[in-house]
Amino acid sequence: QRSDRKVHRTVQAAVCPAQSGTVPFYAVSEAYARDYPDSPLWARGEINSLSYNNTHRGLWFAKPRNVTRKRWRTGEAARYVETLRVRCLTPQALLREAGLSADAVDVLALDLEGLDGEVLRAFLALPGFRPRLVIFESNILLQRSPTLTQRLFR
Image (tube, rainbow, N blue to C red):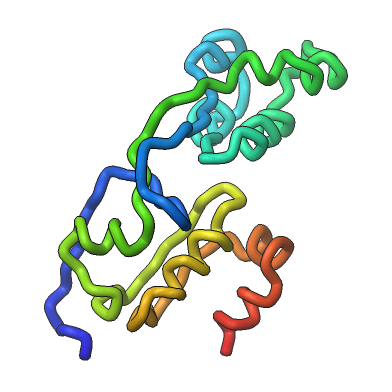
């Protein structure tokens, strides 16, 4: 039974579908913004992921005008992807740390740069996890996990 009490908890960690621990997190370095100050704002601070390929691919869309496509795709873009180490929790560990039970979650918002389906499956596998609202990037989830998307719309 859901409580009428509104609770918002913040936990500083990435969410990994299978195992908690410290994992690599890939982000566009500050050098990109310094070298290409006229690049789109999203390219200077919003491209990051637990997947190197997703971060690198995101930079493909931010190729500077004065760089050839070949040069950008064959190494230039990779110079601007930095690796950080971050704490990562499974959905179960995240809820435990936040002091919440699976049935207490009303809203789940995901923006995981291509890993949405894996993490959503892990949340849905938790006994009692049935949020009233799930927010996700539908274009990504529809392409990569059509059966999962169908399950959400039942």
